[in-house]
Amino acid sequence: MIIYTVKQGDTLENIANEKGVTVEQILNTNFPPNPDNLVVGQKLVILVPDVEYIVEEGDTLNSVAQKFNTTAVDILQKNPSIENAQIYTGQNLVIEYENGEDKKFIATNGYTYPNIDRQLLLRTLPYLTFLTIFTYGFTDEGVLIEPDDTELIKIARDYGVAPVMLISTLTEQGTFSNVLAKTLLEDNVLQQVLIENIITIMEQKGYMALDIDFEYLPIEDRDNYIEFVSNLTRQLNDRGFLSLVALAPKTSVNQPGLLYESHDYRGLGETANLVLLMTYEWGYTYGPPMAVSPIDKVEEVIRFGVSQINSQKILMGIPLYGYDWTLPYVRGNTGAKSLSPQQALEIASEHNVTIEYDEVAQAPYFYYTKDGNSHVVWFEDADSAVAKLNLIDKYNLVGASYWNITKDFPQNWLVLISLYKVVKLL
Image 1 (cartoon, rainbow, N blue to C red):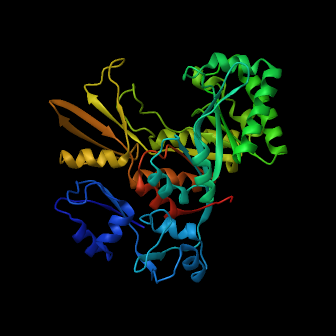
Image 2 (image 1 turned 45 degrees about the horizontal axis):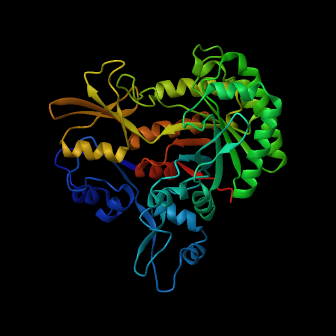
Image 3 (image 1 turned 180 degrees about the horizontal axis):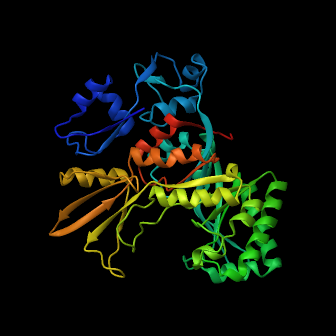
């Protein structure tokens, strides 16, 4: 894998010639939104094919996979321009890239909303172990509030991805309530009603795991939360399901703050099958401009996490998004706009600005002016993806969890398959 940083005057043609690949190969893997107007500082992932194949009449994805002793999913990972898992006569497929030697297997989870663009979903699923659909809620009687998830579950399973049900404190009013969580955690009868309803839905719809995401719980419910997750995990495991629990990004046992106090890393890490560390949102909508996941902050959380939890239970949170802030930033007034890395590149290209890279945060950013207002954009690129994914190997983590795959970031997946192989449970 080569990560190329665009210089002044670069075109796709001269980059392709220099690196020994075709323009089409760069386009069909990076999907740059600005192919005719690259900007200085933009990153391109260059993967050099080692084994290629021209599709013949009568070939299918599975038959080609059999010819090369590989899988259809592996071919989809290496050829993200394939649409709807359909190939056509004369199509050039990459079977293997250079330096495609054996890699470590990791698990990956992708969060999504039910309204995700279906083509984006199909392009992303080959890189996932789990697909977590946001979100189920519940009432104070333990009745589930269901999202529109049936189609996504079927598509996920068709692509060999394990669907994950997400339970949060979403109310009938569409808001999240720690009062509702408190009611649940202090009522064992209500807990059992909810657990039975969850298991019924999982069995009916074809879910394989449950993600528990209760945030901003009062500290007095910390032990109750551990007991709830323990009881829920036991009953899930008895039915053949896995449990995952999402945890706030802590750096110490007694870290103050409502977001952190009730999330006992050791207690919850021992009871759940897997743990998702939400290592993002340092840069957030109403906060000051900064990287969403500065690598130094992320590593501090991971370092604490592995001191409390078996590292082979930990999925590290990785963002697939950035923010656009209007300047000057005014606390309580400025609200940043969330955007995908692809959208960030579109803005940089439209305004012909240079993309800078913060070596401490390991994140790209740029400034631009629109309608007389100054803006700063912090986002993710191939180098920032490498920095985060390298922590998985460094700390022997089980894998990564992405928030969220409705944000388009093609280069992340190229980096992922260059560093690791993805576990498939189906």
